[in-house]
Amino acid sequence: MPETQSLMHREVREIPDAVARLLDSGGAAIRAAAADARDCDPAYVATVARGSSDHACTYLKYVSELTLGLPVASIGPSVASIYKAPLKLSGSVCLCVSQSGRSPDIVEMAQSARAGGALTVAVTNDAGSPLARSAERVLALHAGPELSVAATKTFVTSAVAGLALLAEWKGDAALLAAIAALPAHLDRAARTDWGALGDRLTSAQSLYTLGRGPGFAMSGEAALKFKETCLIHAENYSSAEVLHGPVSIVQEGFPVLAFAAADAAESAVVEVADALAAKGAEVFVTSDKAGQAARLPAVRTDHPLTDPIALIVSFYAMVERVALARGIDPDRPRHLNKVTETV
Image: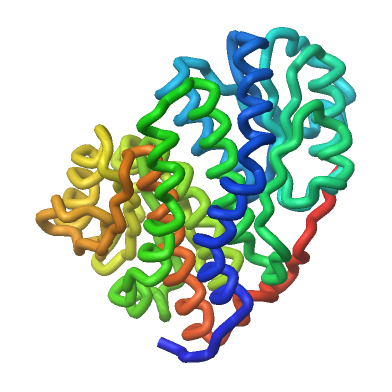
């Protein structure tokens, strides 16, 4: 694999420090927002986001439902920005996630949610952004400048900020301890060698990514990054769905990446990974339980809900190498800008 260092490479290596900084400098804001959420005692949580930020929200959806027992609804920003339809959100908490905090549709939906009665919490890397000014509470990411177009530091810090909010809200001591220990685990994850997968993908044109539960959010983020940085067509599926129809595309050597955390879904993900390998696919899975699929080394953290965060960091380190091996600058994907402002 290439030895050239991109901005993306450096930013992936900065993730452990960025998470430590978030937990240190942003801890008070997270605890204050959690106290407000407890006082609100909502019937549900809503999220507003696009792109990588929306994948972070998918991760937080599972965390909320698994820990707090609160269902999560993803609201399309166009409901406010294009259709101008007010929503009845009284008695809810609305997480609005945007790395830049400047996309007009996200900002307008946050304003609409607040007007509709929701407790609005902005998660953004710019505490002075329009989104931050629109919300009642702000969780600044403290990620520092992110110059590569591909979001890495800000994706991980968005996920961790939301996770810490939910853990504080729940008062989950075990999860809070696991979050505090994350920086050391993420440092190991950034150095974990997924070179076997990377070598396979240098000439790939298409692949599937798979996950289940919180890991499904990470497989969705991985599919997006394959498109953005490597120009590889990647489709994301729940491991519970891929055998229902998408499996028809699978042929000899078809690459598949399956994200398995050390949680209740691990065996189910591995079972599907092995089934696809038996059909001739070239399957890589982040579990040592696989029989036929290739086993990728996975950093296990102190909690099943923090495992997926370590997995995506290892993925980021690998996919940047794949982009360079394919002759692509991962920092400047074609047709893309760092900030996409949609209405």
